[in-house]
Image (cartoon, rainbow, N blue to C red; front, top):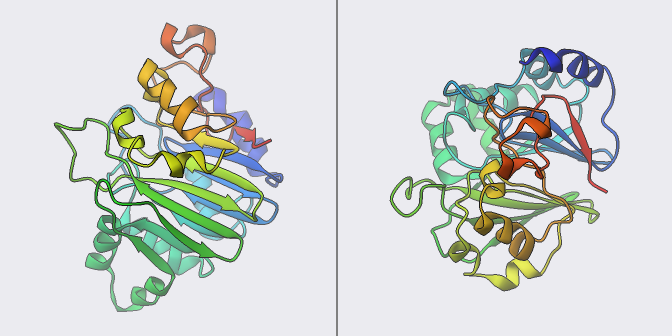
Amino acid sequence: MRISAIVLLTTIMASSVTAQEAFYMANEGVMVSDGDTRILFDPLYPESFGQYLLVPEEMRRALFAGEAPFDGVDAIFISHFHGDHFSPEDVLALMQAQTGIALYAPQQAVLAMRSIADGDQQSVFSRVHAVSLEYGDAPVTLEMDGLLVEAVRIPHSGWPTGRVDVENIVWRVTLNANSTVVHMGDADPNDEHFALDPEYWNRVNPDMAFPPYWFFSSQAGRSILENRVSAKRNVGIHVPQQIPADPLQRPVELRGADLFTIPGETRRLR
């Protein structure tokens, strides 16, 4: 964790999350709250690949203990099965420790969990919702108390020459029929993917989207955010540590972008 984050993180961990807020954990790990409803995206993963932030140990401890600000988490969403986004071992252990949490994940991630689950861990799968989507499939909709969950498969960055087999899921989640967010995982910034279902994207104007930072680095990515995802506000994630937290010190193409860079920082959804 960066030295500049220590005071901020200590303050946040000692306080409660306010209504309608996004709370940054690290890399693509984000918690979104609307009142007492709380969801997590990509919160547990083992790999930094030498360039991405890991979730601070104090956050991990509070999450497993169900302590503030992670008390009362309702659901976890996994974008895809890569080591800088998902740990099957950690997610299994968390769901055992916190029996009120539901999991929404691509089929690849769920199969990885099943392959290592022992007898005592089998019960968690009653709270697991696997999404299996091929590229070009229509989006799917799922519901649970307080949540409207929509999912669409958008290829991982590197398409069409690499990572085409990765089930990267873009989640659009509405909390309490009130706050809508979009978590994009490692989506590829090519409008060809989003143009497959313009009605889906036009149906909702989310309060906030969390695109990987590279969507801000090209005109194509910025156009997708503006004309397809159409969120009222975009906050970039998956930011390498070498990109400065100070906007004035960033590369020119990122200076106008709002990025999550320090664990514990927050954004109000409205």
